[in-house]
Length: 342
Image 1 (cartoon, rainbow, N blue to C red):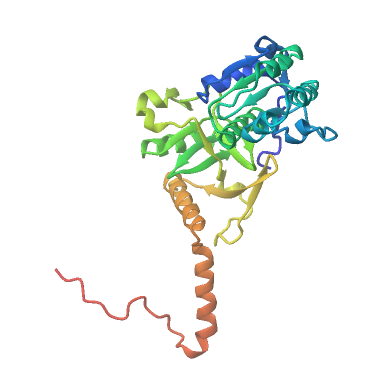
Image 2 (tube, one colour):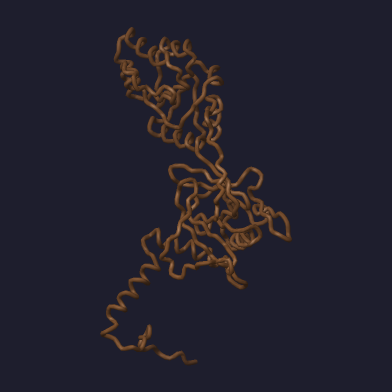
């Protein structure tokens, strides 16, 4: 069975705060200003992708305080602290930082009094400030963390972007997956990865990418390794693409059942996500490249609400229901048209 042995890449158990901060600066271009305990970021670790706003914890309720998460302090929390007298403000914040918090982010250019930040320094809790508004920063940070903590697997196949649809071409070794992908690239489509495909699951979506070693490269049996980006240009490659269809190639004699109508809607489970599966038996002379393009366009039509197989089925049903009122002779598509005479 296809993809029976899916080697799961274990998710990260923790991410060093200092490493996360560098990634946010370099990858997301987020400017972060250290306010307290910067040197302790190397000893702190994030263990999950969820974030937390500690409003209730600042007000004194800590029974359900998820202190192990990154804490986000925005306008609401800062205004609450400023409305307290100095003694209550210090007591409220000290109760917060007494927990083993990995890091605190102040958003929207908010700031805290120096005495309050000194408490964070004393409890070794790193505090950083960003000018980005709270909801936007939380969205970017959570999306980045979900990628870091995502479940992954490696599959044998070739991933291509055809008309914007991510198709994973699978099948036995030597059946011609790379050759089909190369033909698609030559026709203007884009290669994501050849031979080894890494799939990352985020929000029930599977994102496909190459490894650091095989990106841009393809192995064509009898020819060797080719560099697709150098040969066809930057337009011929993608670093990642959502997986939307699996195209399984098999020899005709090994195909027990061939779908003739397209009504079956077969799927295959990958990392707990069902992906549409097209099982295509191949024979000499069959143009797999054009069929791959048709698969992509047919998927787009279904996405926009038109299913050709269902439309044809309805047409057949209508014809059968009206057959008693018709002659036995099949009706022509066009009753009369002007002859094609030169």
